[in-house]
Image (cartoon, rainbow, N blue to C red):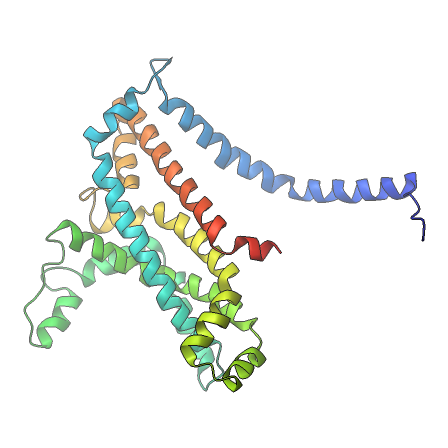
Length: 291
């Protein structure tokens, strides 16, 4: 049995110096996160529980009167709906991108273009597309022989326009993440499964999904957090009606008297994002990725 030698003081010093260099290199990023994310979040949470310098739940008790519950429902509809569409469409795009074919580079370039468009620019473009009179969408519908649609006529149609605009812009990011996962799957796995008689659906369920689960979890986490924080698109397309959580926060933050209400609404949004993130990390394959 070999006896392991204990590290010398010199070796320990070298290791400590190496780790110190890593810490110093990460220090700017850590300072950025603490200074511009964690500290402001703690400050907002603290202020949301105080009224005139005293601990109170009055801000939260007042939230329903400002449209809290409808804004939560609308946020969930837009965020979850857009996220489901993005994942399904992105997976289909990634499965096309991973197979070599003539014109694949052109196809990949076209897929990425929407992600490079500014959010405000895409919001303005879709406001023109979905205009009730003279909009491009109604122009196509009329050309096909159907009656024009009043796109902004109800809460669901308003949210549908926002959802459509959002998944058009952000699907490329999910597609690129899933493309990385699909590229790492060995073709020999599919060949072996085919020889054993597994059909396309069986190969997708038992080979593709388990292998891309970690990256799918990352995509759901990154895009899910962004979806719950959606702001510019709905503000340009539908304004403050119907409300979502971020427009509710912004509307009340702009007035000094209702600013504590915006702090409480922001804390509610943070709680929703935290719950969502924990669920994704627990059941979305993060454990496999860590292994």
